[in-house]
Length: 206
Image (cartoon, rainbow, N blue to C red):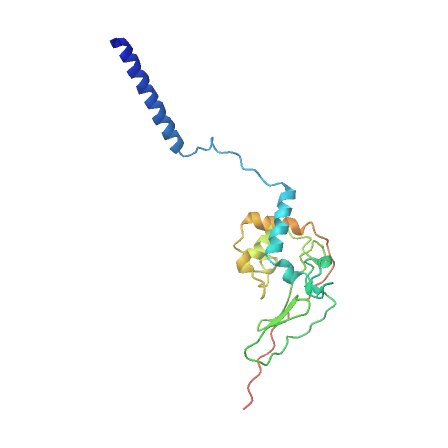
């Protein structure tokens, strides 16, 4: 092999080494905006399906859907009234007086009214009925209700047992999915009563 051939081989080996180094550095180089793939937005159908899943695993029907005795004899939510809140025809006018010092909360048979130290709370009508439900709500109202723990996002505090402080940790995307799902369920006219304040504390007899 003559000197010229050796020179060509050496140059070729050097070029190959440089190519390997450049490729390795490129693989470690942070992706530039030009390299980023466009984010795929879920379709409306996918968003609604996600919302239904979150409503199910989040236990929303446990309280916001009235319970009845099912055909198998066990209690469960009446899905014909899904998320319609406390039935307006079940009248509750005062907190339940509990005497035992170890129990201070009571549930209604429909699982939609709760009596405790805060008074009586009734689960809201979350269906898209425009008069008694959330039909005129925007997503921002819904989001702020959950984030702030206040009715309409700015009004009275949400009462127990609503675990809004847990749901407040959801992402905007998850909350948007839940809201999208509630827009697809049957609107039900059901005027849920306002909360009842707690009863005055009785003074111990002397």
